[in-house]
Image (cartoon, rainbow, N blue to C red; front, side, top):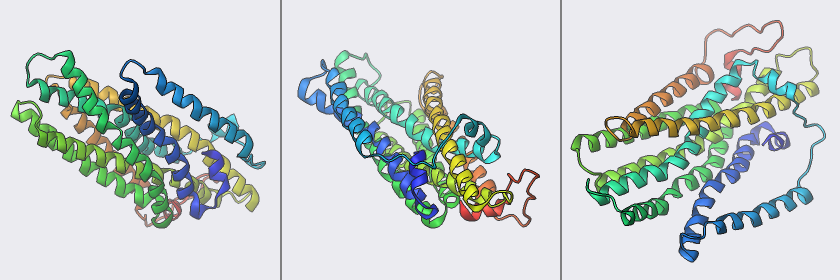
Amino acid sequence: MTNINAFYPQRLKGWALGLNAGGGNIGVAVIQIAGLLVIAAAGNRSPHWVCAIYLVLIAIAAVGAALFMDNLTNQHTDVRSLVQVMAHRDSWLIALLYIGTFGSFIGFSFAFGQVLQINFLAELSHGGPVTAAMTANASLHAAQVAFIGPLLGSLTRPIGGRLSDRFGGGEMTLYTFAAMIAATGWLTVASELTDASHRAPTGGSMAAYIVGFVALFILSGIGNGSVYKMIPSIFDAKSRSLDHLSPAEKAVWSRRMSGALIGIAGAIGALGGVGINVVLRASYLSAAKSATMAFWVFLGFYVLCAAITWVSYVRRPTRASTPNAAGTELAPEMVCSTA
């Protein structure tokens, strides 16, 4: 990701970063599809074949990297850059926003199948005893649907980057979080209605869950692309206030800071996946024994992310902030116009 950022100009970074990361994210769906194919061909007693398939793919990727990838002589990220970049307030804000997008993608990739399995099992058992055959049947039904979300989320990440190149990363991120709020609200209403009925989920409620989750996957993919577009744009704008550096040195500083934050934001954002699964587990262990509480938590977090995006990267303040002595702070509207 850091190297891809250095290869392309600002006007193409959203598309380039989105395409590169989307190719990696699609592995989540591929592993699920590979598992289904192995079950269909060899039964459920041969999971090692999934690993065997990936050994071949890893070998091809390693040979391709060794023979065809280029190293840029002017692109270096050291430990000092990783420390320096976190001194900027924007780095922490971007990491938080990426928890909302990439964390959602990772978390729902794991949780979607589990939520479907729980609901399918409840529908099959009708509140009665659960048999091994019911559990296996529910798991298979869930697996047949679960890969769709990660697949669509991966495919829409480059689209989010391309749209951000055209309309701005801040604006696209705000619109994405607004849509994620609507999708989560849909899931919350569906879950509340299921809880109120005191019955097992019906076909209609299952369809509502699938529609809501698929929408969140698509939107999280778009958001992943838009948030990562913001990173090089923000530091390119910040570099303009570093008057003690030459234009070439400003470009190097911008690339170095962007590369460092791309790595850090990715690591922090992945923690959101852990948070989603922890919250869902707590929700199912609550008195309601459903995901309703978790959906309310997700809804509140997306509202927070939308508010942060609006305040920090979209609204146009009437007065510019004054750069400090180190020249590391930038007028908010300059960041907004280039994000």
